[in-house]
Image (cartoon, rainbow, N blue to C red; front, side, top):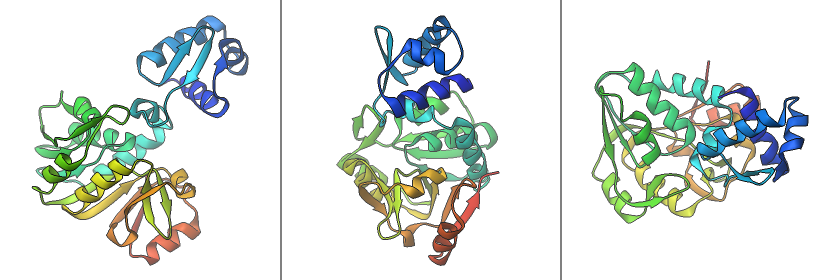
Length: 249
């Protein structure tokens, strides 16, 4: 994605509904160029258009979330892929970084089986013939493109894997890793019960965001893969809880 596209998304997320003329002025380009950018971003589901304006999409929209810090998320995805060997079966929860991680596995590993509740993830990796994909059933949440609820939990319970990879919406020292959606968080808690080791893939900004619903206690987490923005204090605290911290290269 172009740097200008990221700048557009970050600006309208901060300022809300924004005129095309203002975006052109802020980004030092023409209104014609901005309109073309907005058309493309709207096609990808990353924003909405109104006459003369760009409107931010729902922050819970998975395509919207994937638009932010793509290079950073790709670094985390590549680092996480080093944790998986050819022939492994892994469980991957929905989330923007997790989707990029799954695609990285599909590109670089052989005979990996991915168990997931993410419809978006399935769409990303379906073209790769060296990966077997198992999509858990359940109720589809259209914004996150994830399957949730009792059917998803029951299906996840049929598996036992060594590794589960998940993202997070937030974090608290008292409550662990947190989500913004109760049903999705409940589903992820059930998926976590099917794994021996749980890996959290997240940008460092999430460590300053509390979130609403706890889905993973700190004592459940084996490793956190994040970026260099995590503070030394938070790194030391997490390591004191027995969690490995890996900084994406």
